[in-house]
Image (cartoon, rainbow, N blue to C red):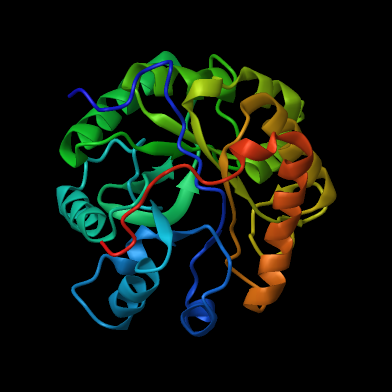
Length: 296
């Protein structure tokens, strides 16, 4: 299937600076309509037939741009693609009309059982061919490109034949999909696997990156764990600044899934990202450029 955007010369939409939409903040957002450019929703939370989640979603969507982010596509699994899941996902896309849809470059299911974890893949040619075939099927079914996100990882495979960024690039190129680059995950994996995070940033194709994630992590002593329960740390902020210098204006959001602070505190943290970008990027490129129908 051919899509509307170009290939290597993609014109990247820039939404500005956003936050993950969490139930803790529904009331505050609806009552105060805070100054946030956009929200990222967790797709699976709204793949339901009705009820309060969809009511809150519709009301907030009326005022804000949104993108969708999933955790259950299991694009790397050897299980067959879950067509019931994809049907529900497509219906939610039609409801939300998001800027884009993303999930993770991982596998989550085996023999039909969801592990509820984002598990890494071996970096080799067989895996590339397998994942590319599945991404193409998903994109054909949805009628649009998807974004794949890099994981934080804690193990490696003896069967890997290349580094993660070469593997990621090759899948994005062959499948003609986009990349959601998680800056914190690069930092976490670089620490755990003893590589230079700048090598990762410099190895990723500029034109494929459509979104950045920022988040906090925890340490268990030897390893860093991507827990999304802390503020973004200074080294990750520094890496974000380096990413902006390489990739330019990329829509950026902060994920927070535990120890969730009050909305104004989280908004203050997002302002750090805005301040870093303002020091690096020309002022004229920082205004969001994608035109959304926010009443959809």
